[in-house]
Amino acid sequence: EVQVVESGGGLVQPGGSLRLSCEVSGFTFSSYAMSWVRQAPGKGLEWVSGISGSGGSTYYADSVKGRFTISRDNSKNTLYLQMNSLRAEDTAAYYCASYMTTVTTSFDCWGQGTLVTVSS
Amino acid sequence: QSVVTQPPSVSGAPGQRVTISCTGSSSNTGAGYDVHWYQQLPGTAPKLLMYGNNNRPSGVPDRFSGSKSGTSASLAISGLQAEDEADYYCQSYDSSLSGSVFGGGTKLTVL
Image (cartoon, rainbow over all chains, first blue to last red):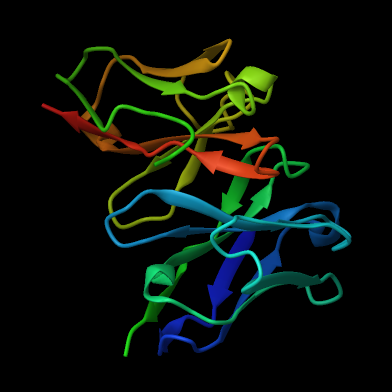
């Protein structure tokens, strides 16, 4: 059974940093591109970042470019999102999701999400 | 604003058929990239409902169907049931943004 479990969310002040983790089991982690998708309270889904299976290629939405860094540790089946210079508009539930194959495809397995609140 | 457009809401009575449209542009849906659909029930994570324009993952009822033509795609739900009440999102890839894009979402109300 595939399991995707995010952690690391919480309350952080504007300008602060937070690192999210996503632990995956049930499939060959290194074979699949992974992503982070967020959803602000009461709003729609927004793709944040993606990474290839090897970790050699990374992609970011313009809204987070230069502030967020996606990475993965295939030996630990874990995906990360380092979030720096956080802003109030980054407040959202952050979902970890696997791509069906490459970064141009669908997101087929999702975690339950971890909530990030940026507020003073 | 989303680069991919969906109607904010649709509604239908139980047993009826509803469709949700998804319109993109020449850098995403019009560039030949597939459209995928997600269902998000209240308080839960999104779930893949349709991939590659018209393919249902295992477990998704055949009441759900998808299609795509040019820059537009649509999700049809026939035999509407109360449990279908949810938010629905379309998604594609955008070559100009080098990333995935979601539609703004459509809230389906079962009357």
